[in-house]
Length: 73
Image 1 (tube, rainbow, N blue to C red):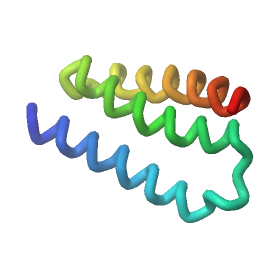
Image 2 (image 1 turned 180 degrees about the vertical axis):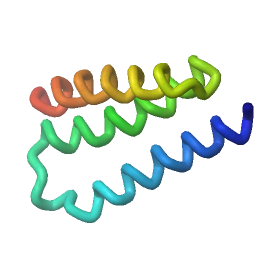
Image 3 (image 1 turned 120 degrees about the horizontal axis):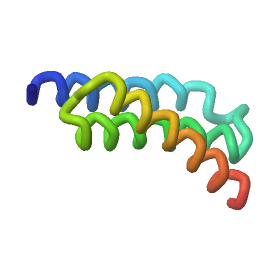
Image 4 (image 1 turned 135 degrees about the vertical axis):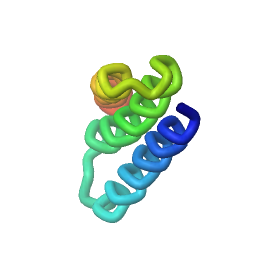
């Protein structure tokens, strides 16, 4: 189970790194969405013991929160 959690964390980090390649052209809310998605996916995977539904749910909630926080920056 720990290998699945490590893999999900790696996927989250790689997603954030890939998104950073287009970082300059993004608005603040888009940047917040990207960061929130990655962080939410990692937290969701940790809380649900690596289950796909927990990871996807965490990513979705993180994206919503990141988008709203980014708008207020």
